[in-house]
Amino acid sequence: MGIIIKTPEQIEGIRRSSRLAAETLKYLEPFVVPGAKTIDLDRKVEEFVRDHGAIPATKGYKGYKHASCISPNEVVCHGVPNQYELQYGDIVNVDVTTILEGFYGDTCKMYSVGEISPYAQKLVDVTKECLHLGMQECKPNGRVGNIGAAIADHAHKHGYTVVYEFCGHGVGLKFHEDPEVAHIAEYGSGAILKPGMTFTIEPMINAGKARTKVDRKDGWTARTIDGKLSAQFEHTILITETGYEALTDVYGDF
Ligand code: MF3
Ligand code: CO
Ligand code: CO
Image (cartoon, rainbow, N blue to C red; front, top):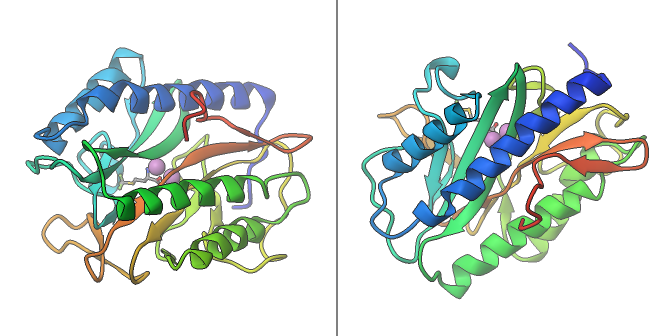
């Protein structure tokens, strides 16, 4: 396949879709409270995305039925929205991918439900730092592997583990394009970054073991093998002539 270099017109489309995905996460904030059911949050996501002329990319994707992935506590990613009521002290990730005029934008972030423990807060903070350290490796002639190397160094320094079973990915004209962006990798490895590439960085960092297992009943929800907490942040990144632009970083709050 190879990595697609986007045209300026395509980049503008991906930028608009990415903005909408970010706006969706912002819109959701006041609804992420104790007692909220994740299925109801998913409905809010779907309404907002459609009201803005877009389609939620996950809906119908490989049989997935929802507009978002909602992953509380020990859920690493791909949490299927359901009847679970968020509890005071939970951490929860919401991941939204929009298709606007054919272009894809992909982002996720963590929400705190009420006040969370210092233990949970530290994991959330370090995971956000991991995303930013990965972003700082994004520049023309950089290597994809440097992103994962920087992320893993930081996570390990804090005693956390890096999920290796799910990766970032090229995005923009399709949901998942080349390259695969591993969140644990060797410096100097992987494809060479060029202006016009668009891809996600979406580290999943675990408090305990790195391994995950997928729920046998819903076939999607991936949990930590040991039930310990996991956190994730995701931006859609554009490589520019001088560095990068985080297309989903609309509010500067993560
Ligand atoms: N948005 C997720 C990502 O960041 C993918 C979700 S695919 C789904 O790559 F089918 F699980 F929804
Ligand atoms: Co993604
Ligand atoms: Co995503």
